Image 1: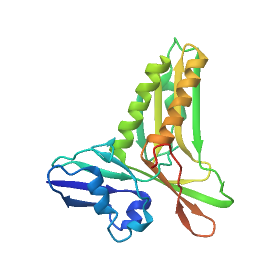
Image 2: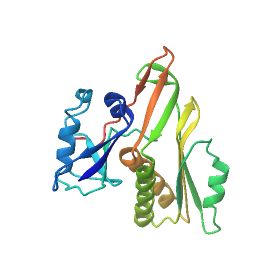
Image 3: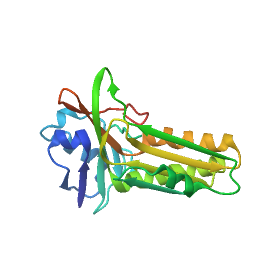
Image 4: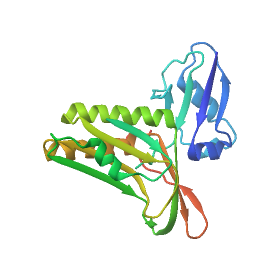
Length: 80
Length: 142
């Protein structure tokens, strides 16, 4: 299956891209995505367990993904 | 009740008119502004960005929670995105209710929750020419 992985703010700067397409095995989880992302060049500046949202809602690492999901890595927020 | 991410100056008069209701005995306002100093560094401005669809969804959920918890039906939240200068308003939250306690509590709930949940980020621009993302520690951060 294929998912879209989105990066923002400092994470996008560190990784050098705002998003990427990722091909995963069926049954893959958020943790599988994080493992792949944290192996990318520039990912050493990311925390070991970044916040993640799936389809616009915060999600746990154990969340099983589905075809077409949008997975977003959320840097520490600073609104207001 | 309404929330919006906006790229133009916040019109507080319009927000006040939006929550105005003859039944309101209290109107509570929170305005967040860009300050000139942070951690000892002189700040010239801030660039705000967001994961926009999720930020709008999250803020809408926060408003609904505040409405349910405090019985406040009149809540408007606007958050600016883009380049802001020192003194500019980055966020305005306006609530109206027959009683002041509910209006104030709902406003406070909205701003505190927004600061920890809404995926919005800011990059400060300093007088020495450098820029840096501002990290806010949140309870959700692993």
